[in-house]
Length: 179
Picture 1: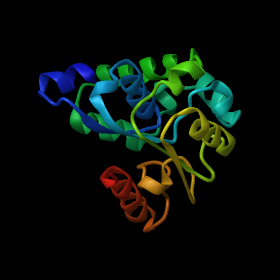
Picture 2: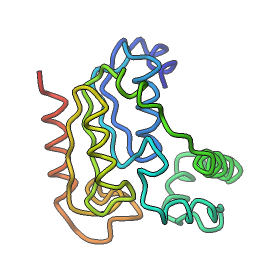
Picture 3: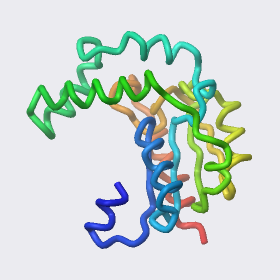
Picture 4: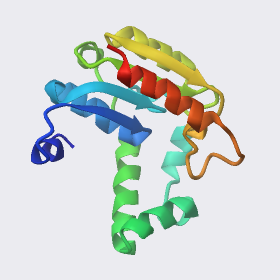
């Protein structure tokens, strides 16, 4: 990600990451602090015990055959190669099976103001999100109603019509526009 920003000649960017994407955004903020102006860390964790325990049971049985069809369809719409879909799935599942905690010292060193965003019924434990606001300098916490990504209108999780994505976008926009 940092390399792509450099290729595009973007010296500094606001980074919004959801779930595994938030972990990627955090790694960029840790490894390339000059590249991240503000970070939105949505529905992600930095410690294994930061997740609800059932996540790890699901991860152990993750297979391309039980990947939600809407996620498969969305990937294949952008890249119609089923082999690449399987590779992406398998790499993500393997990464989560071998999840390692981010050291507190690395979190304390993050310079970018960070918005930690979770649903009140997310896979991320609310206690973990609160802990992150204490570890990350300049962190704010937003807990909104819903499960993993409901507040964003996530493709698989959001099962009803809701204004939550619109309201969440307003909060995120305010955070990004803050001085």
